[in-house]
Length: 549
Image (tube, rainbow, N blue to C red; front, top):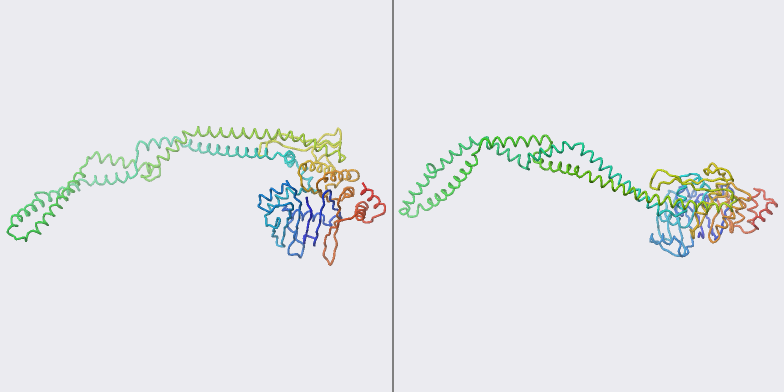
């Protein structure tokens, strides 16, 4: 329950402190006196989005503080605990708006975000403004009203989840089908290219090896001739024979040389070993230079085939093997594509079946809830002097979506025998206000601890009808708290607590003030609402009669 509101430097309010009470609280005053400013200020401290220019002209900042009683079990406790904010039986909200637009908020003297304020406001206050009927007139909002009444959010969440799953399954299938179409478009090429590559079977580094071998074989005859000549010179008829003879002669003379030939003989022995290694290398080279002309032809053919295939596919020769693997993977994907598509189609069918079940469940729930809403609204219309009006919630099919497959529209028949139709075509302004009040009362059912605020909900009605609206508001306030901004004397007279909003001009500055009214002052205020500027004795008598009930 809202216990108090403290406002400083907001619009035309200099400083204002209000203490509210349980039951029906009414605020009255001339048009433009500042009644809406009170609601703007309350909305500001609750984190609602509204006008940005709230700071009073000339002030550095505006500030609003609101405090609430929180009984045990109030849903605000859960919000506070989740946000890690101090909890207790009293809740104090404070918010500052500087002249340059910066906003700062506190909850129980702890800094917090606007999101936390808005989460708390959903549990604390519900405002029904003078323009709420615009939403009532728009069928797009009727489904949300019905769902709110029936507390169908869990079912709606299931439908949204299922719809999201359907969307993902459709996207996955479409992506796979597009990819498969692209692969099928080049299937002939893939199979031919893989067959060609498999037949040739090139290996990394093979092109360089073939090129080297080809060049060697092309020059082999000339090279082999020179190498053979070198081998002959190194052989027994050449260097080997000469060195052997020299070594034999030196060994024959070594005994008489008294050691002078030892070094030469040793060096010559080492040279013979090196000569032998050189001969072995030359022999190996000769063997390697021996080739078959057919072998050269085959090497050239394979080399040219590898290079031609590399040019054909615009890859390096050493990359042909990897390129073949890539093409094989595409073919494998093509061969497995039908199975994959079948699995994706099944996943889509399963997702659609889940959505159909969730949407059907939601439709059934809405159908049941609509009957309850129609009955509840009808029960509220009787005390509002509309006992002959018929309110009906019509549910029709519409295209499937995240909110289900139902279009919801509220229709009314205000007179017996008259055809039912949309609210905006059938109901008058005063009737719309009463329909709105009836709906809001039904929607507010079961929201314990919620302060309900009605901003000129009684416009367009008067006399006995206004009295009926006031009595319904009074009944709604029993055991709770209702704040009403009204121009109706009948409604004002039924308030348990009454404040007058007025404005004055001093030193060229307009300010608004709110005064709690005692019994005599209430008579004068209600009389003013009945008669205008000139309050007559007859008006006072009528006001007293209204206040006496």
